[in-house]
Every structure is written in structure tokens, then in C-alpha cells.
Image (cartoon, rainbow, N blue to C red; front, side, top):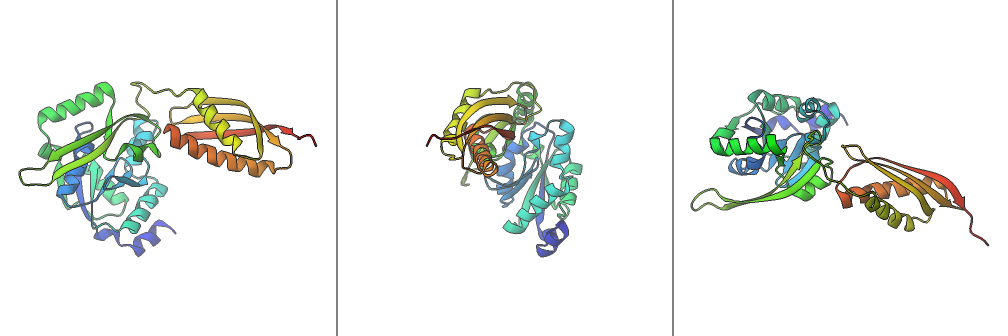
Length: 287
């Protein structure tokens, strides 16, 4: 099914579109859920992600991109595949309204146009909801520490984010006297292209995970060698194994690779960009 077919099935041009605009690093993502709540919308588009309440339902964080230019293109949904994924999700959830975050009026208008959404019906600016001091503080943190907030819980980002995860941030605010308190958890991350620092996971951790999984894989007799390299966007893993005689080599390795990639990403929060498993020997049990 292509983009045109999906749009015909679900008329996304009926969705009411709000925009939240402000310069990069001034606290938009930090306040996104609050602004969305005031507009009674449960959906947010921010940096390539479609967020429903506190859950990422489609897209991939633009902060995974290796350059700032690639980040901007990703956030604007230039690629057909990126548009298709978001529009499929809109068809599934059928939102009545949505909030788009951007650094300028032109940017949010471009995002809406690229996704086939109607024109922006109302725009909220960061200066409407944040003081000059708050914006300067947020900007200072972005420039000096390279931190960026995504308005979803930490465990949602861990599923697909290969940048440098820093820490979760929980916010408890009151919208005013007599109003229901606002509680939201967000994730503070450092984009992949930031060179402010990094975290390190020992090769031994990967090897132990792989060894544990190999024990559960009948086709693998033992692991001979493991090499792990960090490529910024994720981990590249090379393995050599001994196969147990009598098992289909290709099928056994395929099943192991699939399981290993999922478990490593789940347990370490790092993407596995490449996992090569080479069968070096065959073990024949003595009769």
C-alpha cells in the first residue's frame, strides 16, 4: 500500500493541526505535553517521532542522525518511507488533532505539508509559555552540555535510540489554582552527533549475553571469538562459532542472530548496526 492509498482510506486533511514554535534549545520539548494538554490533543510530532500521550507510536528520532543536516531532513520527513510510517500510524489511531513542534513557522508548515496535513490552525510560541530566564537557562544547558529533551518516558527511547542516554526527568506542575496537576516524564538524551561525551559498555557484557544465548541455541556448540566495535550510531559485532554436527548451519545462525540482536538492544539500550556470525568449525560428538 502506497502513500496515496493510505490518504484515501483515512482523510488526514480533517485533522486539526496546532504548532508549537521556538528556537532550538529553548525548552519546546520540555513543555510539549503541557501545551498539547491545553489544546486537548494527545498526539505530538517532534524531531521525526509521532508521540501519543507518553508513547512513541511511529517514526525514528532525528537525533540518531550523524550530521545536523541529516537531522533536519529527517525531522521534516523528506523520505517517502518516513512519511509512509507516520501516515500509517495516523490512519491507525485516527487523531482529531495533533501538535507539531518546530524551530520556525516555516518548519512546522513544511512538516504539515510533507505529511499531507491541513494548514496550521493555531500556533503557540515558546515566548507564550516560558520566561526569558527559563529560555536562556535551557539554551545554556543545550550549548554547554549538549542535552536535548524528548517528551516521552526513558524506556520508550531505549527501544530505538542509539545516542547517549543521560537520564529521565519527571515533572510535576500545576496549571493554576483549581486546575488538575500536570505530571509527565521525559527523556534527556545527547544526540549521536554531539561530541560532548559518551558512555562505555565493556566487551565482556556483550560476550556474556551472547554466550548465554548460544547455550539456548542447539545449533551452536560454542563461541570461539567475539569482537565489538562502537560506531557511534550503535554497536558492530563480529563472532566466530563452532556448529554442532547435524544442524542446518544457515537456519541455526539466522535464528541466533535475530535473538541476539533483540536481546542486546533490550539489555544495553544500544542499537546493533551489524552482527556477523561466522561458522569456523563443526563439532562432531563421539558416538
